[in-house]
Image (cartoon, rainbow, N blue to C red; front, side, top):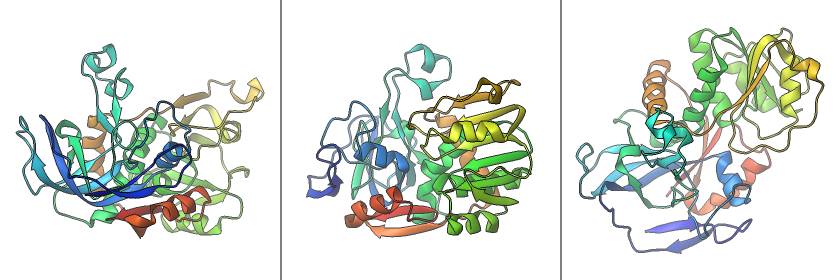
Amino acid sequence: MYAMILPARGASLQRVERPDPVPGPGEVRVRISACGVCRTDLHVVDGDLPGIAYPIVPGHEVVGLIDAIGDGVGDLRLGARVGVPWLGSTCGRCAYCRDDMENLCDAPKFTGYTRDGGFASHLVADARYCFPLGEDDEDSELAPLLCAGLIGWRSLVMAGDGRRLGIYGFGAAGHIIAQVARWQGHEVYAFTRAGDTDAQQMALSLGACWAGASEDRPPVELDAAIIYAPIGPLVPLALRALRKGGRVVCAGIHMTDIPSFPYSILWGERQIVSVANLTRQDGVDFLKVAAKVGIETHVTVFPLEQANEALSRLRDGRLVGAAVLKP
C-alpha cells in the first residue's frame, strides 16, 4: 500500500510505501476509492489538535471496498462498500458510552487523528464503526457525507426546529446541510467570507433565500445559526443576528478564540452550544435522510499525491464545495 503521511506538525505530507496492513480481531481492511478533505484534516496538519503521535495518516471521510476481514466480524462481507468516519472506536465502558453519548467517550480513537486514516490506498478500521453504503452514487460524491455531512447533520439537529436558519461558512458541510435544511422546510441564510461570490451563488442555487458576508445582518432575525468556519469572532456576529431564545451551534472541533462581547446580545435566553464528534446513530439517521433528500455534493477531485495542494486550497478558501482525494 502507499499513503500520504504527516511526519511532523506543520510539515508537508509525504508519499510513503508501506506493507499492506493486516486487520486484527473485529477489524476490516478497506481498499480506498475516495477520501474527502475536511477542515479537521487542516487542524491535524497544522497541529491545532493535541496529542498527535507522528507520523500519522490524515483523512476521515473514507469510501472503499472491504478486501480483508479479521476474526470475529460477522456483519460485513468481502467486497462490500463502506464508509469510515471520524469516530474510529470508543471504549464502551465509560459513563458517556453507557448513557448513549459515545461521541463524548473518555477514551475514543479518531480516524486520521489518533489512528491512521484515509489519505492512503488502504486502511484498517474497527468494523463496528463502518457504515454500509450500498451501491448507489459515486464514491467521490459520497465521501464528504462521512464528516461534513455527519457533523453537519448533528449540528442541524442541535439547532432545533426554528424556521429561519443561518449557516456561517458555506463550504463542504454548509452546502450539504443547506440541502437537508431546505428539504425539511427551513429558510436558509448563508454567510460567507466577504467577496466570496462563488460560495454565495452556490448557496442561492441550492435554495438559500439570502446570501451575504459574515459581517452582514440578515434581512430577518434568525431562529438558529450554525457556525462551520473555525473563526471565533463569528460567534458574537451570529448572536447579534438571532431572535430572543435563539441558538448558536459551533460545529467545529477547533475554533479560534471567541472575543469578549456585551451580555446584552446573549441575554434574552439566547444560547451557545458546541458539537462534539458524532455517534453511530447519527450516521444511521443521516444516511437515511441523505438518500431521501438526494443530496448533490459539489466536489473537486484530486489525485491522492496532490493532497498538499488540496489542503492548501482549503486553507486559503480557494475551494467551492468539497475536495476529494482518489488513490
